[in-house]
Structure formats: C-alpha cells, structure tokens
Amino acid sequence: MDSRVSELFGGCCRPVGGGGALRGRGGAGAGGGSRGKKKSGRNRGGKANNPPYLPPEAEDGNIEYKLKLVNPSQYRFEHLVTQMKWRLQEGRGEAVYQIGVEDNGLLVGLSEEEMRASLKTLRRMAEKVGADITILREREVDYDSDVPRKITEVLVRKVPDNQQFLDLRVAVLGNVDSGKSTLLGVLTQGELDNGRGRARLNLFRHLHEIQSGRTSSISFEILGFNSKGEVVNYSDSRTAEEICESSSKMITFIDLAGHHKYLKTTIFGLTSYCPDFAMLVVSANTGIGTTREHLGLAMALKVPFFIVVSKVDLCSKATGERTVKQLERILKQPGCNKLPLLVNSDDDAVTAAQQFAQSPNITPIFTLSSVSGENLDLLKVFLNILPPLTNSKEQEELMQQLTEFQVDEIYTVPEVGTVVGGTLSSGICREGESLVVGPTDDGKFLQLKVCSIQRNRSACRVLRAGQAATLALGPFDRSLLRKGMVMVSPEMNPTICSVFEAEIVLLFHATTFRKGFQVTVHVGNVRQTAIVEKIHGKDKLRTGEKAVVRFRFIKHPEYLKIGAKLLFREGVTKGIGHVTDLQAITTEENGLEETLGNGRLTF
Image 1 (cartoon, one colour):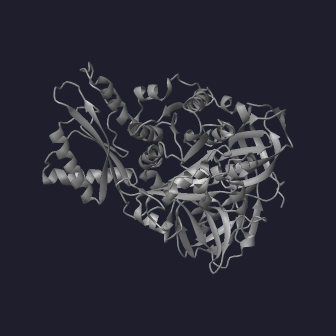
Image 2: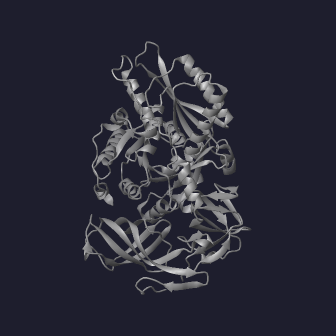
Image 3: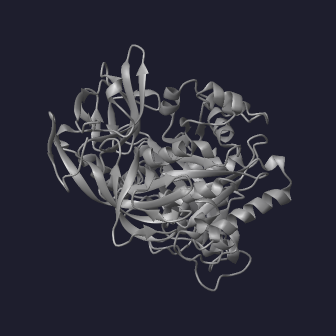
C-alpha cells in the first residue's frame, strides 16, 4: 500500500487538535464516563452554568451508575448484588461503577463521608460475588455546591464462574527494528532492557533471529492481571501455568515480523489469529517506515489499533514530538479518519481504554522507553482496563453453534504425537471429542479424535468459541495436515470450493488488473495462490476501482464462508474485499459426492 495507503480508504476526518481536543470533546458509552469528568475538571475554580452529564445509563453492557450506596437495607443489598452479577456477566468478568452519578447521567457527586460509605458497600457487594474492586480515578464536581463533591470510578473484576479467565489477543505490528520484541520482553519478563536487546532474547524461536535480532516467525507472549489490577508476569511466576492460575485477565501478544520480506507471515498472523486489537510500534528516532503498510493492513481487516512510540530515550524531545506529529497527520488524513489521543497520565490511560473500545475512530498514542521504563506504567494501566469487544450474549451465541477450529500451526511433539495450534471459531471443543479435518488435496475430510487441549501452555479440558489453543491428536499422520485446514463437527457437512467470487477494492496496482492475473489470497487462515478468472462488468481494474471478481485456487480446494474478509497481494499489488459467492463441492466421508457450479472444477 506504500505511501498511498492512507488515501485509499473512504471517509472524511473531523478536525481535532490532538489528544487534548479529543478529551475535551468526549465520547460515547463507557468513554462517556470520562467526558463528564473532563467537563467537571474544566469547571473547577468556578460554578458551572450547566450541570455536566454523562450519556444515560444503558441497560446492557458492564457500566453501572450509582448515586450513592450508603447503608442499604438487606433487601436492597441483595438486589444490588444481583445487579453486580449481571454487569460482571455482561463484561465477561469486568464491570465499571460510576459512584455519584444519577441514572440519567447527571454528575452529582458525593461528600467525602458519603463516598467512603458507598465504597465500603461496594466492597461488601464485590466480596459477595467473589470479586475485587480497584479505584480507577476520582474527580471533583463543583456544580451547585459549596462543599467539595467527588465522583469515583471503580473497576470490579472477578474470575468468571467457569474459571475461564478473560483473554484478549493483541497483534504487535511495526517497522523492522522499532523495538516490538524488546517491548514485549520487558512487559512479560518484568525487567527493563539493557539497550542491547537482552529483553527480547527469550522471545526468539530460531537461531538466525537471535543472530540478526529480527523476528521472522510468529510467537506468543502472555501478560496477566489479577483481580486487583496488579501485573502478573514471569518476574513473579516461573511458568505460564502459574501466570494463568494467578490472573483474572490475560493479554496474549502475537509478535509479528516487521521486515518487508516476512510480510506474508505478518498478514497470516493478522488474518488467521483473529486479534481483538493491534499494537502498532513506531521507533521515535527512525520514524514511520513500513508502519504505513501495517497501518493499512489493520484498517483493511478492521482491527482496532493503538500506537506505541518506542525508544524515546534514544532521541531528543523535539525528535520524539516530530514523530508523534507525523503520526497524528497520517491518522487525520481522509483515508484514516482517526482521532489521535496522546496519553500522558494515568487519567489519560483510563480515558483512552474506555473510549477506544467504544469508538472505532479513537487511536491512543503512547510514548515510552523499554530501557528507562518511561511511561511503561501507562501502557500497563491501559491494558489492564481495556474491555473485550464482545459481550457475554455474543459469546453464548457463538458457543451454541457447531464446532469449528482453524488449523494455524502443526507440530510433532515427542511422546505426544501430532499437535495442531489455532483458534476455535465457534462451538465448544472437549477432550476426547471426535471431529473431521479437511479439506485434503482431493477435497476429503478425515476423522480424528482430540486427545488433550492446552491453553497458554497449561492443560484445559474445555475450549470455548473465540479461544486459541493447541490440540493433541495422538498418532494422526502429520503429513495429511496443512495450515488453512479446519476441524469441524461431523454434523456440519462443510462446504468447500476451488472457485469463489468476491467483491474487491484494488488498493494499488502499477498498471491494470486483468483476467489471468495470479495473486496470493488470504481469507482467515487460508493462504493460497489464486488466478483471476473473470471481472464482472469490466475488462480491467485500476487502482481504487471496485468490482466483483471470480477467483480459482490453483492447488487444492479450501473451506470458505460467504462474507469472510479477503486480502490479496502480489508484489506491490494489493486489494481487499469480502467473499460473496461460493461454487461449492459437496463431500461425504468417503470423498467427493458431486460437483456443483459450472462443471469446470478439477483436482
């Protein structure tokens, strides 16, 4: 996408004067909690003409407004506990309470004595449901009162009832040598870097990565937070299993390659591992580089991203500020339509986390150093508060569907046998369950049995939709497996295809895009070369044009779904779109049953 990437997405950017202007403007939903408080901050020192408001409280979601919780009756207390259980369920184990706020969003505030009593009641409620509370921040409200009145924002967190910790996946993108692996090493190991890359050594998987200092493969690192919001990493725990046991919330970082020659690995990590968020790392002293392309990938796949400007200890303050301004300029361009929010304090970090999850337009920017540790705590505060994108209802709906597991990695482990790694897209997978895997080169699905399951390197009996894990398949022949396959429930009767149609936008092509052109297609965990068979309604496409295109996989059929996001590339040629139609091949356990479509499918 090169320098054109930011011009290739439609939309128009609202003018905003950096992070400060954004915070003054506020946001919606959970972010609204900080909107009213920012107003009250501006009103400090004089009476407000108009009372500050938050958006009215929503019945759904994990945000609860409470005016006061002073000495409730037993009946009222039980009702409050039930309400807290509902909010925690909606937030998958996390809830935010705004104390001193009416249900309609009016910021009233409480005196110090009333606030102390309310927090005591809230603590009792949390103990009743097996949760802990953490005060995120306090704000004074001067509206219509001579007595100082405060509003307190409280995070309530518990381990969900099924003992499955809240797990968020964050893909780490950025230019080569921007400090991605070093930053992850510092976060997950709990020790600052020595300036020569010591922190990243534990993350590398190959000898040539250690020798060159450049990531070429996809690796996973975990950072935990307990119910009180404290960091749990390898500085306190010896194993990943201990981190999982001590954590109520887990951040799984997917460390991707920054060098351009490993771009296909980076795209595979973004499309296949379904990250909830992306962290774009930019070096303060070298500037943007490949970051434009990674920014375009995140936007094309609609992955919400935040930016970390690293290595601020290596350059002057003016150089760091110039890099931040350069980023803000790119983010505000019509193609990006983002509102940058520069994080300089704990308060900014709380505001950023809440508004970021609610509004797709907001992009928090952190400036930090992995050597001096400057502003590292702000990133930890942000990650601690960052809420999940899906609520419990959406999660339940996915779990009701038939089992579908994407195969992203294949290993052979001594004394265990064949092991596959990937993400459970839908349904529930249990130890001992029988599934079918495919499609093979001739379009078949093969039966297998799940012998054991591991999540974050610790044993797990049940896997739920949206979770990543490794499954041991025992003596199953590894040569029959490949990346891009799916393991599904036998009742699903999966449809596979070699020919499919997609509505695409050509992001960049040096000349014209025509019939017969070959591209590498990425759809979820599928990565294969396909040939353009037909462009509907046109003979050729130029940069920026849309069309419905028919593709044919040149090697073997794949399992696709209508509506799936698609990304294709070949050299400098790049495009995005979604699958609109499949010319399906229906299969039975014994092989191909019949061929549908135009009758030209061959194997």
